[in-house]
Image (tube, rainbow, N blue to C red; front, side, top):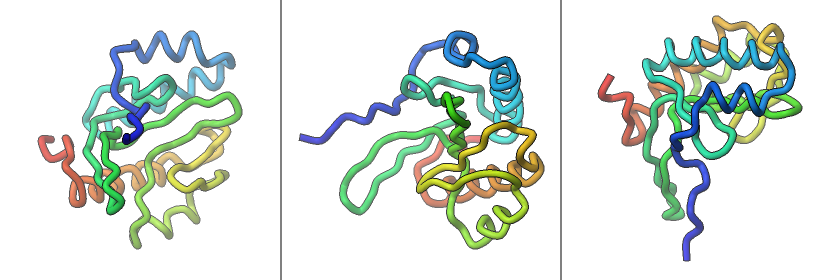
Length: 146
């Protein structure tokens, strides 16, 4: 039996989540700034996805293995140690932008940063915009309605 995807959109208040989950004032301020920026870049309001991801818009994916589900088009999580940014699609246009992003670590599916002041926000915007375009071209995406 297939495992249910835990990362689904919920009705939890994003503001309530940040105020109760994020302990440090700087991380709270960075979280609200990311919400403002990602809302502007994506054209979507923030929604909680699962217990700790703040996502913008949504799309449906299906892997060759048959696994499928829904995910936010872009998003982030203000984890205890660092932010997880779910904004990157590995395209030829996106890869060189990482050189100018600033101080970060790369995971398999996300970019990890300690704080917004460690990165170049203009480069982050370009990465997000390219990822939105990639998802729009390759998946069933709410961004097509925008």
